[in-house]
Amino acid sequence: MKSTVSLPEVGSQAEPKQDLRSQLAEYVAQQPASKQSFHKWMQILETASLAIPVAVFAVALYLSFAWKTVPTQAIPAAWLSFPLSFAPFLILVGLHAIGLRAFPPTHLLGKTMRIYLPVPGQVDKMVPLRVGGKAVAWGWGTVVAALVIGAFWGVFAWAVWTVNVALLTPLITFLGYALGIAIAGSIIFSIFRDIYRRITRFR
Image (tube, rainbow, N blue to C red):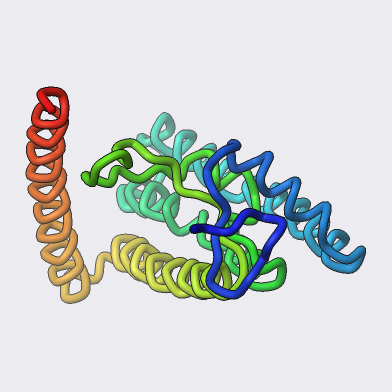
């Protein structure tokens, strides 16, 4: 059986009996004062880091409306910087998870974490709170993903701003293939999920 948050063993994860926010609050309440303080400060930093995408979005929106008075490449460069602006938040979340040994360590991320598992009894299941070794692994994964994705969008935005055609061509090609695969995969997954749901209804 899966352990609850009261048993933060290495590689364990909490049962999804409660929402993630309640599970996390219960887990944090059982931690030493130093970890509770660390959790509090990381939450403050994570919330503050979300001001970056808000500011980038505002700038991109302003440039879009002021398109007659700004360089042509400034508008797409600004919008391409928007995904990059979430990198600091994701890096902080990853470090937060590593230090707290719980993932997701904040409800800001946990609210959006839902997966669809086409297996009996687990359709539309919410990702449970992970604690221990698995949480640390997820934390490092989040940091690495944030760096890779941030680097991609950062280079993309810079290439657009400098009109670097030699760099833009492979980036656009890669993005096109990635979107195509993602869309096709999503459609195929939705078809199989619907088939599975229909089969389970007749059992």
